[in-house]
Length: 328
View (cartoon, rainbow, N blue to C red):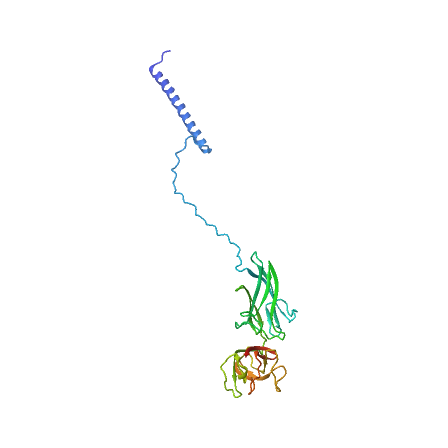
């Protein structure tokens, strides 16, 4: 077969076009396959370089100091009071009230305490427990048998703990004036405990005595001494008191102030005109506060016995004040 030159060129052109078309289709298929792999979330065969890491200077952790361990408080005294109760009692120790810290004046006789003493050492403790009953005005309650600086003291013997009791007052009452009183306990010269109790005043008609001063005078009120609480027996004529009376109840009151002069042996000084239970009485009227004076004795002297004498002031059957003087 004889082909001309134009036919041969046409066949070659068709062959080349066919080859080029096949290569283009294969390239498009590869690209589509790669896109499908990426879209499916599979890892790429080649990752871009990681971003540079930021270098930070390390910060040291703060140092926390733990709080100190709290040690239990140690007793500062070899002996301590670890428990106390108080109540009103009669002279024989019979209860007149429940245990409490507030008492009515009209009912108070002996204010008694019940305490537990604890030995804080390894040794046995024996000695005197000093007790102070202190009034609302700061005065120490004492009598003729009181040791110096105390109302009284008790001998105690404590190995580990000891329950003990004590009290102060009078069979007829009147020892504790209205107000807040204090009891202190002392050991080896140190106060180891203190507590308080209250005496309630009557609702009305209550008087108090203060600023008690004494001096020796004649029957005509002429001074024979300065104000003092100590006198020579031969010199005394009329032992005269000067007092301030205060009405604590609010309403004006009128009544009789009973006065007792009592000798060293407890004998009440009386004469033919003395009322029952008193040396004498004064009728007084008082709104708020007033000063009063009176006395007892004679022109010849020798009325008062040697020793510690006392004067008591009573109002409506209640002792509201007292003082002492010494005769030598």
